[in-house]
Image 1: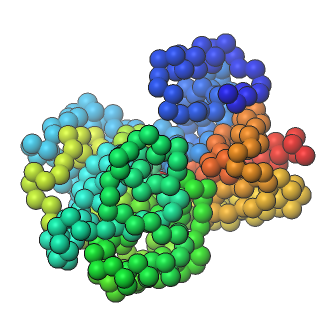
Image 2: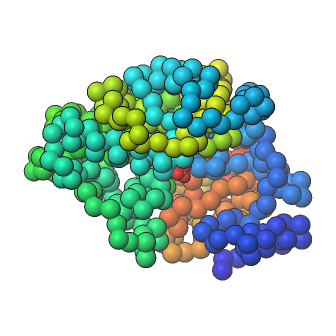
Image 3: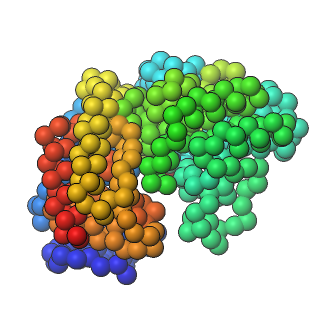
Length: 416
Ligand SMILES: *Cc1c(COP(=O)(O)O)cnc(C)c1O
C-alpha cells in the first residue's frame, strides 16, 4: 500500500475506511475526501481548500457546480427526468438540433458514458462498413492505436495494451488492428494492404497515456489517408473535446472534421453522465429502430444539462482561455523544470498538460509528489507511473495559474 504522508483527520479516515470496506477496490484514490466544489476549487471534509488540477479527468471544464448548469439540471429534475425513448420528450429534439449545429454534424446519437459512446461508434462504424462500404459480413476491422484509452467495456479493453485493464478479463472481441500512435506510415501500410478496414479510432491527444501530443500534421494526414481508402476517421474526444486543448475540439487544431465524433465528460460540465456520438446522415442513418439504444440515453435532464454546459463554453470563451493560459502554464512549468531536474519533460496543449517526473514508471515518486501537492493545496494524480497530468477547470485565471505554479515549485523543491 502506498503511503498517505501527512496525517489525515479522523473524519477523513472514517470515510476512506468505509470506501475500503464496502466498495470494490477498483480505484486507488489519492487520500483526500472532498465534500464541496466551486469553480476551480474543491474543499475537503475538514474545510481545507484545494485547486483541482484533474477536473475529474476533464469532465469539469466549466468549473465545479457551475450555477447555470446546476440551475438547468434542478429545473429539469423538478419537471421531467426520464421517459425512456419509448416516447418523445420536449427536451431531446431541441438538444439534438443544438448539439449537431454546435459541432457541425447532421445527427447525434445520445448515450450516457464515454465508454458507451465509444461502443456506439464502433457498432456504427461496423454497420456502415457492411451496409454502405460493402465489406463482407463479419470481416470488418477497425484500426486502433497502441497505448490508447477508450474506456472499460469488454470490447474496448480487447484492444487496449494496458495489462492491468485486460488481465483475466478475456476472451476478447476480435476485429481490431493495433498500430503505433503518431505514425501515419503504419496507418498507410495497413490501409493499403487490407481491403476490410472500416475505421480508424484515435484520440487526438492520448490523455490517459500521459498527455501524449502527436506531431503536428498527424491528424490531418491520418484523416486524408482514411478518406483515400474510404475508411471512417473516428475521433475519441471524450477527454480532449469541449475546449480542453484550446479549441472546441482537438481536431480543430488541424482543421480536421471527423466522420464519427465521440464526446463525453465535459459535455455535461461534470454534473451528469452525458455522452454523444455525432455523424452525418450517410453514416448515422444505417442505424434503424431497435438496433441500438439506452434507457437513459437522451433523457430530458441530460439534454437540458448538456445544452447549458455547451452554452457556458461559448459564453465564457473557455477555448480561448484554455489556449491562452495553457501557454502561461507550460512556460511556468518549463521555467521550474530549468531549476529543478525532477521534471524531465513538460508537454500538452491548451489546459491539458503533463509533467514527466525523472524516475521510472514503477517508482512511487510521482505519487509522493502528488501527496505533497495536496499538502500545499493542489490536487493532481499520476498517470502511468511517472507522469502527472495538470488539467485545471478552464475557468481558471492567470493569477490563479501563477499561484499554482508557486505551489508546484515549492512541492517539487521538497524532493530536491
Ligand atoms: C474517460 C475516457 C473514456 C471513457 O469515458 P467513461 O465516461 O469513463 O466511460 C473514453 N475515451 C477517452 C479518451 C477518455 O478519456
